[in-house]
Image (cartoon, rainbow, N blue to C red; front, side, top):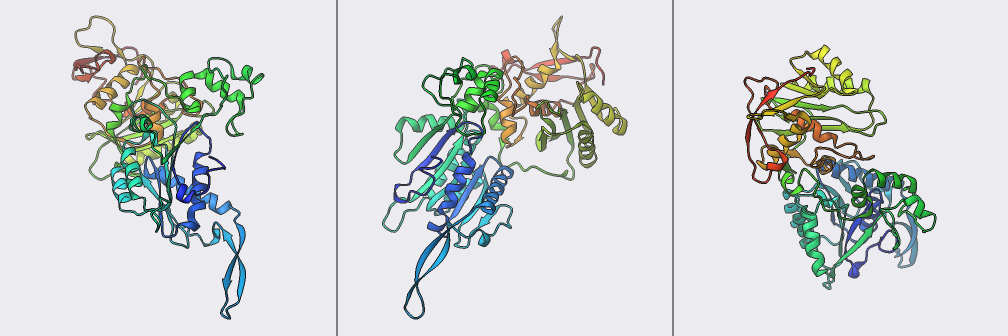
Length: 490
């Protein structure tokens, strides 16, 4: 697909679905395919669809960089001059980059009326696409697996296709994703449609490695000595791939081999928590007048590969207003970032994971903002269910069971963020999460759990909370609990 099918197929056009490994340049290839279609299909709107508007705009920015660095070829074109003499002049193919309008943040405008338009994967976008009449390359649907409204977007694009003057269907869309979770909207659609195998759809498998004798239960390095194991793209290295395989085989199968792994161990079920993701929920850069906020902070930084995360929720509606995360940050910058957020949002409560380097960060925040505002979880902390004689529920467990209960009752709303969705799908039933060199340690989930802790959660006499333990999720048994605070620093 990278080479043979990169250009438009005109009357032989087919939609293209790529089940891909990570970092296989699907974005670049599909962008080139769309750019090559520009001169053949003027006055076309080309939707560029990702999970949310920010991610879609990011993709538009990537396409702009391709345009800036492209080298068009000169093609002689015949024309008749005013004296009736046939002459030739050179034109640039597929277009002259200098004539493309790159000023708009959300769109790219070409001289012949073509527009590449960023669109979030929500119901409003599907409705807008239905009103378009599209020929040629019909845009990109990227990371489809995590789209709640994937099927709506797909049907809208399919139905927006218009044929040529003689009725030929000169139309093709580009769909790409890694697969994770059997019950995602995308996978349900995919497994259904593959039973009929429609003629208008080409399906490509892009695993990072492909060989009939490859055994994923054995060392890739050792197998590479006898098998011709060549990664799909040159920037993947066998040694690094072997490291990822050993970290977590199931994750490696999904993320790098395009295999769907049944998720019996997955704590947060996609078909449940995805109903609490709102593609229309706007991310705000500053507080809304009259709202009250809580902030959860999960510190990480340096070379550990985890995400430093700040998650902000509206306290009463339990709606996520802002999400910040990064893997490349040092402690001094972390402190500045946290202070800036607290001063701007003026939250009612900030809860921070005070273990590891979080302890130093927490102490610095307490010195500036006080112990009443900055709550620090450090050490052992147990929630004891009413009526239980011994033992209790560790705070680590409660951060997850509380969120799962909120998902079941639709008591919270999350921003549509691709990394956040992946982080929820990393956690297992034993409340652990395997470290991933690219996705970290599911850190966004911890920050969300800290932000969503209920009021007065450290007071024994006034605290009554709902909790759903993993073994009780099926029938959603709600228990009153009281909080017992052992030797823990606040």
